[in-house]
Image (cartoon, rainbow, N blue to C red; front, side, top):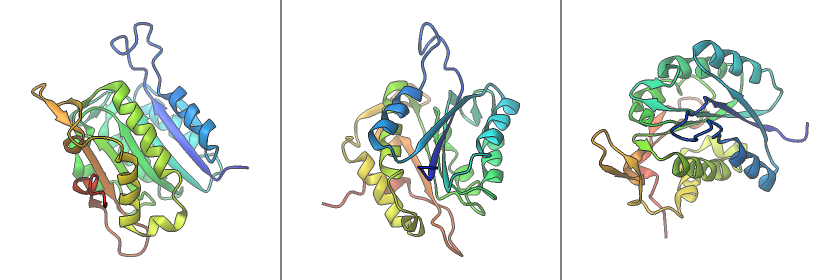
Length: 225
């Protein structure tokens, strides 16, 4: 196998308010990234509810790769991903991260990043180094482009980087360096604009004995001159 890394995309169809013909998908964006970088393989599956989500992940985790990244792309609100509960999705991934080297999890869904404690709980005791999400109702295209930028930076990290929390956070800093912290990426529960700096959640758990998951959201724009 040429590449050692697999990016697993689990996507639920977005619906007509994203695309009139219901054909919108994040997949072409990541095929483009794959063609540019060439250092990872992309796998994509659609899900609709708990069972199809679990079956898709079961199938993908049969692949033989040294490390995996998981990208969930679907609508979200509160504690729900469209089709299943957030806790169910995170527990399913956490269970797989006991026997598979899942490095990063990005949830490209509105509001899910508000559940910081879930990101922490479902990182600890697993191989997961980082989890990322959005606290606001994020604009679809803006969020997708930002997700691509994050994976572009994080997929290039070497395994030794996962032993140091600061190195992981710095990779996120680099991914966000071209974005204005005060730029609007979506809206809050009152439909008020939210800046990127206030809209992102990052939890990091470096590899190694005694490491704990930590909310590093406030460090995302701490970029050194």
